[in-house]
Length: 69
Image 1: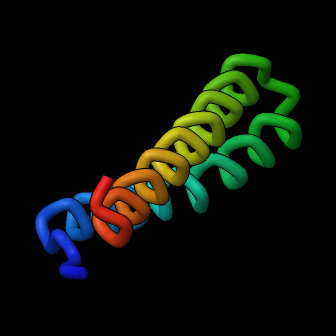
Image 2: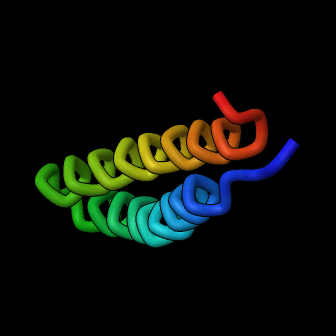
């Protein structure tokens, strides 16, 4: 059973992209709560949902690469 390295690379790349949103989202969300700014809170929530999307997408690619779906 061989691992598809191209698909595995896509998965790792998506997980790396999610790290940006995982650190940026809570920072901006905290800033929004501190400043009582609803626009900043909304942007922080959107960044957190984007991070979850990239995490699930990355895990799906890694599973495809490992189990050859």
